[in-house]
Image (tube, rainbow over all chains, first blue to last red; front, side, top):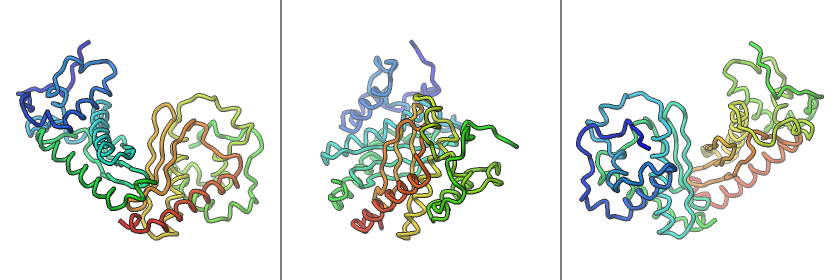
Length: 164
Length: 164
């Protein structure tokens, strides 16, 4: 089964298969999450770089996406996988359950929360959801690392609430 | 414009228009919330008892709803209005912003959160969303009061996190 997607790179792939970022825990978890939400095995034969390729929106790729648009299921699943990966990494660090919650309106606005116990450790407004993506793979990892470190700091400061 | 809804009572109304619960702050806020999500003014000519009637699912009314079903937009809006009302009452009591977040799957499962600052003050799993309702008006008020008092207790105990 082959699927033609809008995300198929029209130019050079944005992720270099030898990029060391692909070997980090974050990228490994991201790949696992994307494969987890791929019920038809569409990605089975793809490499890690190929699986993560749609997350990288270079300026050229971004220009091809209309400014206004409804987020489709693939984009929503992609956002879900990103925040699922963050939640898993939070769990691995703090050994407490981290639960992501993504709410999107039809217009592509939304909010994503990750909670640990009764503590909100990630709280983001989303907009232009149909253009979700990062300038490069390492930018995506930076973003993940930032969310993770803010979350862990909050959990450290408010461990009682996180343990509720 | 008239709308024929499944919710139109097929038997006697379940809410007595002289029920003193209708004069409580909770019922007043509920009516305000339902009217707020009624863009076409369908409810303009309805009394408070009539506006809240769909929230009361007596045993007879519940029997008429299939056990398995997809939640329609009206039911989702109704659940949203209920938790919006709780959030407004939390705000009124603690003078901090309370934000509800409702996430539903197509199958009628879901989760609702209300956050105050970085504190989760309401966190509920939802199921059988298409059968959302209460045995009586006073049961609905009890439920609202319970959610409110638990939320306020959490805010009191963890005021620093609620103030973040």
